Length: 573
Image 1: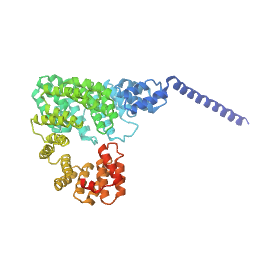
Image 2: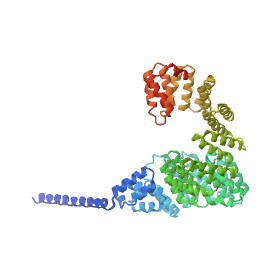
Image 3: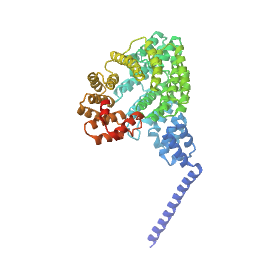
Image 4: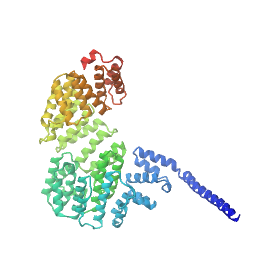
């Protein structure tokens, strides 16, 4: 009896205590809700993040007290917001307040690593990255953490066989390994490997940027001839490199000191910053722009001097449609020199709607009158904008100036004649357009875009049909079967009355390019011609639902849906 009584009392005490604890926790949460209005701020902050507005998200999240105690998802969002607002120090302090289990999780451990690296707390670095508690499904992250290990070794003076470690790393990204060798050997002043790595990248267009890091090395040796040689050779490989264009102008004015403005090879923080910048580029290429900004801000924390890197941030902000923030970054970039000033104003013209377009075009044209260097490329860039905005007459004028100013013949000159020809074709001066399409092909005969545009123009004019078909077969092979080029080839077979072959090819094009109204139109035409009227109407009905369909084409297809493809339509085809 006593035993039974004991269990009853124990059970009642347990229930009472449990209820009290639950009530206490509930009361704490109610107080949190009431005092900080956390739900509203959390929701608003999350929505702001979804809209890619990190600044607004930060303002909402800042109003929340102690939510990290209860909400792990908040921790991740808040830390991401802090980093994307450049508040790395705040992110570090916040993470340190969390449970220690967070310190081995991505991205928390990455932020801790970067912060302590800059603060020279090198002994802690390996603990952040040695045993991350989650497996990496993203191969880029695995690659990044392998390379962070190299920089941890370097900072702790574990430099023996560092190049061998890079060589042994199981990297899927060979250029990453090479760039790390370059940065590490420049930091260590390893003469033999410096020369070896330089010879490896000297003719690689995709690694053009990394030639820049040798300039400070040769500046220390006062070897200005070598500096000029590197700058000129890189501009020959890639005339689009903004940094090297500006350095070319600076060297002409004997302002070699500007080479050291962005990067110092003996500053270990600058080396790690470059690794993070490289990954920011990777993620932008994979269209993960918020992650790209995350890495870019960590890079800027380590090296705030590399201001030309803000070009990547401007591109990201424009993709995210955060035009107000992009203008702030543009104002910094335009002060870096004439080439950066041109870039800044061209970006304003192309993407920032608050600018007066005519005024901005005049500003850029006046710039060109007073600056002779790289003028051909600049006229070409401005002409591209005008053509995209259907100002064909003015774009033709600037394309012709651009071609006239070209000093050296290059393999990529075809694009100048091709773009000029497009403007001329749109402006209705076909003879000039045809001549320039052919000139583009003379310079580079294997360009599928040029083959397609010229051949399709012939199809529209019902001339050179057999030659057009031959060119389109080649274009399809060169382009590995791009949908819009398959459409042109299918239309060539249609005009040559080979309707079965036309249907086969146009069906493939239709499946490959589900957002191209012209392809729907052509496919519907061949289905109707082959006696498949129900399928044809179905395809046409889908065409008029497309958002990007032009009004003239929409009206034409609507008539076909109602009346079908009559004899007059077939003759027009």
